[in-house]
Structure formats: structure tokens, C-alpha cells
Length: 155
Length: 155
DNA sequence: GCGTTATAGTTTACATTTCCAGTTATTTTT
DNA sequence: AAAAATAACTGGAAATGTAAACTATAACGC
Image (cartoon, rainbow over all chains, first blue to last red; front, side, top):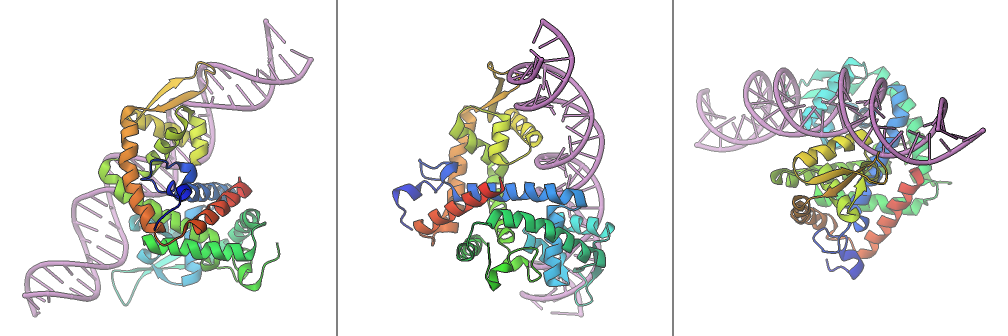
């Protein structure tokens, strides 16, 4: 796509490129800050961002293979394997070998895991409201569409 | 802000909330994927995302304190300290104690660090173009504004 | 000036992530 | 049906990240 003078700078190969003009730089920065904020809220209740991520995914999926969760959370499988077993030791998840396919490890939430979800949602809600309080629905929807599109582009 | 039926679901405290309707979930996922893709390109040339981040910041700032870099990159100071000294061992950066303030450690790029920048930009450009090829300037600008606004909201 | 407080960074001990080389189970080829 | 290829993990070493304690320097309040 042909770009105007200003937005050529968003392309890292352009000589005028700078972090200030880079969409990915700003995106990374925002998500980094979001993680810092979430961590600060989550630590006191014995939770953290990776776990909250897994719990959310399992809330949606009920039962999911480790590799599916890793895929949805965009992490390496071996990282996820270790996280899942840590969460199992903490009583948040429960695993079993699939009867359909002996290679897959099915993961599901325990009662305690589901309880943790409610607790964490309250915290996540605080940050969400602070972040989006002055962003109208239409803007938010528009952004979501765009984010999904970019995701698909590099998937 | 009052939200319509659909976008209430974006708020984690809403009963109908789900990752699918959560802006932060999608943002995290996109940035996670971007990091995975960048890593895959950067590894073969002995680079990675945190280093590329620092190099970019130093390209903008010439000389910067460790805490400044940590702040701009949204990382903990102790993490940044370690990264900076790793990069120094690799010959990418050079540090010195400020003559103005004996507490601050000034960091700057070496020749090798500047050379690395060019190399990495080529890789980053590939992903950028793939990500944004079908996104017009106006959309990109609009997104940037929004991302900055949300960043400021939770800063 | 001097004790107190704040700032900037460093270090250490520990937790987590990543790489990579297996292992076992399933699917595809021949 | 055996062999080969692929998929889903798993385990251990090495790299990296984080929290908390510590050091050095600067700034304040009197």
C-alpha cells in the first residue's frame, strides 16, 4: 500500500522511522503497561497475568488441550505445559489424558479455578474502566475489528 | 460511560464478559503474536525483542539513563539493568556514570549497536508490511491516537 | 552543616520462560 | 501392515525476569 509522507515513518525500513511513529511500538508499550497494572492488582490475591489468561480461556472452552490453550494464549507449548502443572498443584486446574487421542492432555477448571475467575474479573474491571471510560462504543468496536484484522494478517 | 448491550460485554465485571469481547485480550494476543514473529526473525541474527526495543530508544535519545530507558520500554528497572549490561558485554551499548549526578548510569549505542539497528529494521519492516498492508493511513493514524489515549488513561 | 528522606542503580536469591532433545501416540505412506 | 512422518507433550539445562534487600548519591528541612 502506498503511504503518505507522515505514515511512511511507521515502516521500520523507512529512514525517518522512529518508535514515536511506530504502531507496534505503541501497541507493545500499552500491553506492557497493562500487564504491569494487572500484575499489581493480581499479586495480592495470589494470581498473575498468565494464569488469568488461562482461566479465561478455560472458562470459554470448558475442556481444552494444552496446545490449544498455548495457541489461544500465544505462548510456547512447553511454557504452557509448565504453567498448567503449576496451576494444577495450586488446585486451579485439573488435567486428564484424552480418551479420543492418547497424546492430548485435557485441561479443565476446578471449582477453585472458577471462583478465582470472579475475583480477578473485579480487578480487571477496574483497569478496563479506567482505560476505556472516555472511549465510546463505536471507537472500541472499530479498534477491535482492526486489531483482529492485524492479528489475522500476521497469523 | 454508558455502554450498549453488545459492548457491556467488554467489561470484565459484566456477567456476559468473555475473552472474545475483551479489547485487552485481543491487544495482548496481537502483541504476543507480534513478539513471536519478531523473535523468529531476530534470533538468527543474534537479536531479540527486548534488545531491539532498547536500541530503538537509544537511537532516539542518544544518551539516556537506565531508569529512563526502563520507563520508555515499560520494564522494571532491575530487568533493564541486567539487560543493559548483557548488551554491554555483547558490545552493543556503552555505559558511564553521569558527571552531573553520580547515581545515574548513562547508556549510549556503540558503532555495533547502530549497525544492528539497520539490520533489525529490515526484519521489522517485513512484519510491519505484512501486518498493515491492507490498512489505510487514516485507519492507522486513528488507531495510534486511540492507543496513546488508552495508554495515558492507565499511566 | 547535618540528619532525614528520596532517587538511581546494583545484587542476590528465586521463579519463570525458552531451547532442545527425547518419548509416546496417532496418522500417513508405501 | 510395517515404516515414516507428524503431533502432543515432557524433562532438564540455560537464559531471562522479578522482588527484595542493599549501596551510593542527591535533595530537603531546619
